[in-house]
Length: 245
Image (cartoon, rainbow, N blue to C red; front, side, top):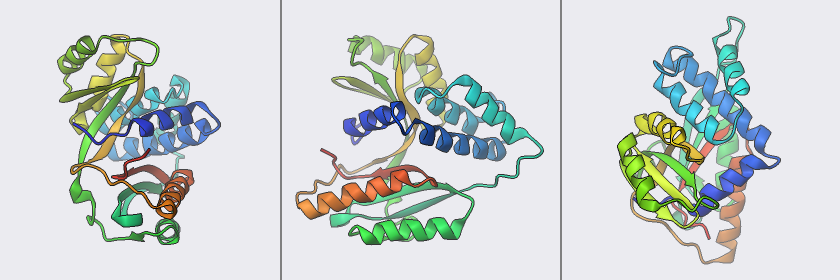
C-alpha cells in the first residue's frame, strides 16, 4: 500500500501539539457529535462511527474528559447543534485531485468558501464524484517509531494479528492499513500492546500514485490552497494526490 505521505502524518501530529490543538479538538468534537446522532447512540461498542472518531481523538491526545463531555453533550436533550457532512471535490494546479470533507451548519456559506479557495489558487471545484473514484477509503493507523526503535517484523505481526489488512514501514513512522470499519478495533488492540499512535482514522488514499508540481507558482498556490482548507473551521479533512516535498 502506498500513497500515504510521511510529511502529511508528521505535519498533522506536530500540528496537534502546538497552537492548533484547540482547533483540532473542536473539529474532532464536531465529528463526534455527528457520529453520536447518525450512529444511534453514545456507546462505541454499538456505534462503529463513534468508535472510529474516538480512536482518532485518542491518537490526537484528546483528553478522556473532553471525549466524555462531548458525547454527553451530543446525547443531551438541549443540544440543538445540527451539522451535516458535505464532501466537495475538485482540482488544484496541474489537475491535482482534491477531496474536502466538511461538517457544517450552513451549507451555502461552506460551499461558497470552498469554491473560493479552489478558484483563487489555480483550481476549480467539480461535481460530486469527479475525483473520488480514483481514491480508496482505508483505515490508516500511524505508529510513532522516532524514539522507540521498534522491531518492524514484530509490529507487523501484532498489526496483522489485530486485524490489519496491510503494513508499511518508513523510518520514523510505521503505517498500518485496515478496512474502514476496523480502524477502531485495530487501534485499540495496538494501544493495548503499548504502541504510541500518531494517527488513527479513515482516509482517502490515491489509487494511481501522486502528482509532482515543479512550477513555483503552482507549488505556492497548492500550498496556500491547502492552508486555507485546513484553517477553515468547517473543514474536517483534506485528501489529495499531490506528492508533498
